[in-house]
Image (cartoon, rainbow, N blue to C red; front, side, top):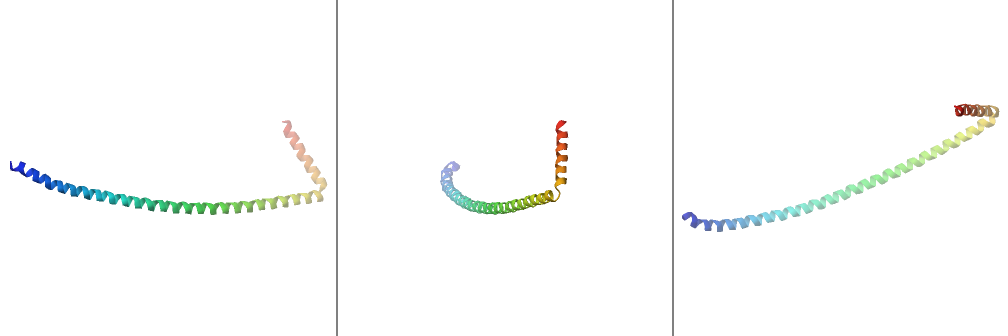
Amino acid sequence: MASSLLHPIRSRRNGGTLHNIESTIEEQIESLREEIAALTKIAGKQSRKSSDRLRYQAAAGYDDLVARSEDLIHELQEGYLRGAHEMRNTVRKHPLATVGAAAAFGLVLALLARR
C-alpha cells in the first residue's frame, strides 16, 4: 500500500524529470540541426571552391592544348611547304629521273591492280 501511495509522488517527480530530459533532448536536437546546417554551408563553399579550381585548371589546360595544336599545325605546314619546295627542286634538277620514277610507279600500280 505504501508503494501505491508513493507511486503518484514518484510519477510527478519523474514527470518533471522527464520534462527536463525532453527539453534537454530537444535542445540537443536543435543544436545538432544548427551544426548540420553550418556543416552543409561549409561543404557547399568547399565544393564551390573546388569546382572553381577545377574550372580554372580545365580552362588553362584547354588554352595550353590550343596553343600546342596551333604550334603543331604551323610545324606541319612548314614541313609540307619545305617538302613541296624540295620536290620541285628535284624535278627541275632531274627531269628524266622523275619521269622514269613516275613511270615505274605507274607500272607497279597497274600490275597490282590486275591481280
